[in-house]
Length: 285
Length: 220
Image 1 (cartoon, rainbow over the protein chains, first blue to last red):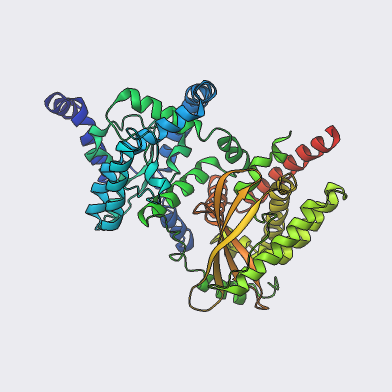
Image 2 (image 1 turned 135 degrees about the vertical axis):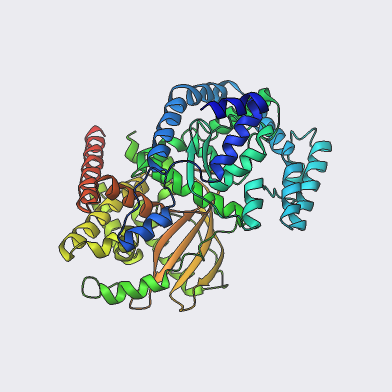
């Protein structure tokens, strides 16, 4: 503890948190879940990749509490009083501010066409779109090519790492934690994670700027967009925490694959053969 | 309106969607497209027939479910390794409960879905895997309760008779069967690793949903 305090005094608050995130990304968090011994269950455990599940569940519940009692009500008011054109403009404005980062990360991934899209979108929307308030580029067929550092690390071969849910900061992975630690100066402190559904999107971050005011407005806009859908998901899910984790992870992989649906990695053929052989007498499908 | 009959939920998780004229799209895997078209037409006919009582339409959907959806395969997939650990009797019970769960939770919501103005277009289809048993059909829904166009992908698998059935549903790239698999595994793990915990959970969920539906019917 003394060493940690000394480190904090030396490097200051912001960098201290960065170091913590990086350390977490290196897997120094204590594992909490019990590793099964059964080979089949071990395979499922590894497939799930949630070794800190007890901690993550607690974090999720805390965050849900904050969303239920604070963010959702505020976002509801925001949605009610803010005219739709203004909401649309804010959404577009914050997205536009993220386009240079999209260009950077697309370039780092060697996705030159997508990098070109991001640059074009930024230039067109910043000028003809009046500072990014209108998505003129989208209307002429230049679609968003959202990227982030975590996706870039994935393309470079950095493994995903364990699933981690940080209270009030939302879901991430070991790799994501590393990316956040590097990107800490981009106002990731609060990124709308009070509403976990914000993270299951098309890869765009609603907070891509360093202004707390814009960040706050972006958080509200992001949350407002899921009002309604959030209740439906909650009412239909078997286990909200697990549903959210799986959809987040799928969303992550979809983002890495640039929107392509990553189902080919799931090899069902072997399972189908096994189903037919082992359970032939039990059903005739 | 009861949560069960919330119309806006149906587009999100309905296994069978409704109404439109699907243009012929002879690309990729026509057999899969044709199968999906047939199932959709059947679902439309059931959902649109408001002259029948709801319970009858639910039973019609159950029959369609058996034809259109690879219920047992989905059940075995979402049970994961626990499918083999269960004995034959428990496995049969679980698969039966899963079927009831699908009907109770999803079918009733589909019946509340506003199908009159929905349009669906097939974007593409392709085979998946190397044995010719699987296909992915990409569709887009718009109109009706869809505020914005929604992409839904359908993962179909061939049964023993070589007929395509729906195995998985991908809503904007998020696949439901994988989520259900993880959720059911979570229920079992939190039940101390006992597979019977999942059976108890499903019975409770079905019972609660059925009670809610009955209250709704009586209220109307």
